[in-house]
Every structure is written in C-alpha cells, then in structure tokens.
Length: 219
Image 1 (cartoon, rainbow, N blue to C red):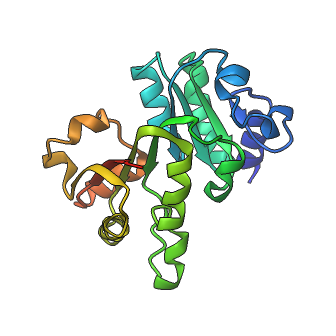
Image 2: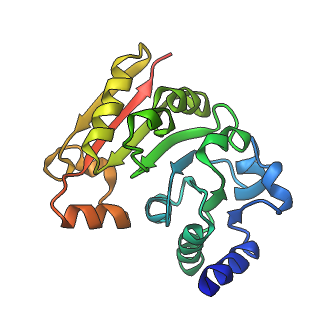
C-alpha cells in the first residue's frame, strides 16, 4: 500500500499524467496539441493502456506523432509515466479516467488512431455491454476518430475477439477490416511494431495465440 501511495504522490507532480485535481484535466478536450503537446501532430490513443507499453513504445518509434495512454489505475500509469520520463519523451501523455468517460477529454475527430490493447474481457453475458469493443463503445470511438482513422485491437481472449467480430458484422460502417486469430503467424504482425504488453507476454508464454484486428469507419 505504501508503494502505491508513493506512486500516486509521484504522478501528482508529473506533467505527463493528467488526472483529477490538475487544472488542465478539465480543459484539455479539443486542446491536446495546443495546450499539452505544444505542436500540431496526429494523435494516437491507447485505451486500457495499463502500464503504457504501447503508448511509450510507439512514442519512441514515431517521434513525429503524439500519443495518449488512457487508464483508470494511477499505479499503472506511474509505470508508463516513469518510462516516458526516463526516455525524455515529450510526445506521450497519460490520461487517468474510465474509458466510459473518455469523451469528456477527447473531442470529436481529435484522434487519428485508436488502439485497444488487452482489455478486461468481462466474460459474463450480462456484462457484455461493459466490453470495450461492444457496439456502444464502438459508436464512441467512431466520434473520436478523424474520418478514415484506424481502430486497432489486440487480445488473447478468443471469446472477446469473436464477440468483437460479431459486433462489427452487425454494423454497416466498417471498412478495410483485417483480422487474425494468430498474430505471430500472420502477415499483419508488422502493423503491431513488435511491441508487447505485460499481458501479451504472459498469455503468449502460456500458449495462448494473440488475436488482432483493425478497421476504419466508412461513414
């Protein structure tokens, strides 16, 4: 507990973590490039970012872009924040909020790309609407993305992945959909830049295949 509280104290003092209590927190919507990054660049958002492996990894690979990792757990964001500080990255930030409320912080069309990486699968049927790839959330992502922006999704969970494909199959606004049930054996692997999250490494070591899909909203 002491370690967690110490991490909360640290991120409270860091500019690269936007969380309740900071003045910029409620003013950032629509102003990420101007108010935080101080430069106009395409923005990639990682939802359910956990420790931020993807956000930090992509920020290193693509210094010409800006990145935002979103998660509700402050102790997880501390890790990504620390990696970013240690690497002197100024093109990545972390937003502490529930994904349900992300529209309060990201304006319509403000995101160039969205990643959803290894979210909670919420396996019970009665919790299907809480899955971050359910149609209600997809409707929100569509608003946040610029026209033609990609949504990308990685998971080890077969049931969640198949559920997501079913949700997409019910829509009439999905274009350029590509997917695989075995990323490491797929030609789509280069799209993931060989960045692996803690959960990906853990599940892959247990023999779970990694699933991946990406698409654009057409209308």
